[in-house]
Length: 357
Image (cartoon, rainbow, N blue to C red; front, side, top):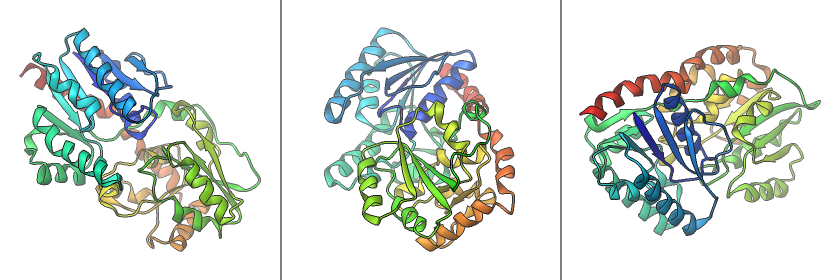
């Protein structure tokens, strides 16, 4: 099959990792796969990257719309996958009149991340309207699937479960190492609108004097969190900044523990955490609270934050740093089933059927 995946956001984001992992895994199965967008710094061969220069704001959306229209006009495809109910990916698909199977990947509640009422309303409207023009909708967890059927009136027969996978290959590059006398806790994320709960983790670090917290990633909230740490007077929190995803393993290899925390907001209840998957796959003892149906899958392998307060985070992190229950090794073994190669093998069977229907 000839497949094109149209991005709607920069590919160095969580959504971007999902799209690039999907593209690479489908191409490895022998399909001709193209991925459009900007901000991809990894090798996705045998898939083909149709790259654009990074832009911001409205210019980014317009340039993506025009570029995706151009890419669609150039060739005929068997399957088009649009990332998110977003103008950049959906408008080009709606203008593509040729006979082709159109799939919308619905990977989060985009509208629920925005406080600006205009942006919130716009993306909520896109989420309601866009699925009507697609043959199928893919999503990655039961909470989000239930929202799509109940609130967006998408029939269950049109929904394909496409779990959130990870690239296990990038986690095999480095062996365990130490970079400081103190123990190291890692938090890895794209520091955009979705990364809104770091304040509680910072509060917890006030009392964990025997460890440093290393924050990996960049985004629109990067300087906001730097200022927060400075204001709190923390000398054991460090920011690495932007890191190519292919290089993430060198930082994870230095970790004695990892942390994730999400408040139970509507957006967070519908997320599927890449960081949790990668922490566990690398064998890092991980502290996290359980928010949403996706996180319940990994509860057995986590040091659970039961009390969603700084003290609750602190207690779980101390257990993770000790790892007396050896959950890290159990989690590492379990995560082998979450590779993109295994997840996409199941998707391929469905695509072969629907592309001929």
